[in-house]
Image (cartoon, rainbow, N blue to C red; front, top):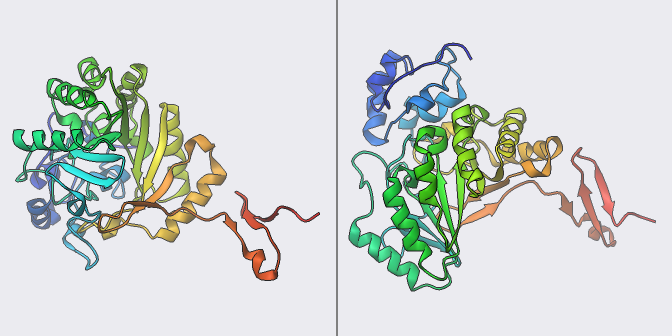
Length: 358
């Protein structure tokens, strides 16, 4: 990296981004149009990761608004994964039998340019569930004994104060059939100083197991401060998994994905999901093709340990859940020849018969 930016406060206006060299002055009018529709926030921790001399910087591409966001494709949708279709009460998404999403807040430390909830979060939206909605969501969880796992999301639940987060964690842990509480967050990357002893203590409860899913898309996001924040949680007995989004110009090459997945494992974070980009409005410039994603997963299989392998998944539009869309390694093509058995492709791309011929 060359020139690194040091700022004291979160940047929320396109004019501030221009003033700090994070966006070109000529684009200001169009960036104001983007910001009028989609939230903007770049924290000091994220700004420090951006090389402002690199017009293709992969960190900037995730957080700095672009005029390309004004172009909305016909297939894009304000609710691309169908949260509303699976929401029985305010704040709850019940897509799978044994788990629910609990959307507590609608604010984030930073706002990703590819966010699938970009129409639902940020300034001008509701910041959090009302007291009545929160009570209704808890009642829904209590009266559905099939719910084994509650996933706190939003927005980013770690934007809550430790005191409020502790109350919520204990409310959920008091429900006998809730055994797992999972928290989806970008905060350890975007604002690692928020992860302190008080926040970690708020995450821990006696009667449920707590997991944290960290969202990061590029190895540079796992800064020394971010790694320290994650270590605080892991050392406290909280297991971590990762979530990443496959993004054009950010991590859509095998070498970057290799570095990212190894960095997760080095931080004691198990790679979990690599999401194909959702059909959120104004995000086509960041999406890859499924075929390219499959090729990258095949390359990753041949390059790194099994510990470093995420599942490549796509959220089916309309609320139908995730489907694994990784490459196929097994086929029964020999049946067409009147034989039984399989063809298996190894990590080098060579094809083998199973069982092998005598």
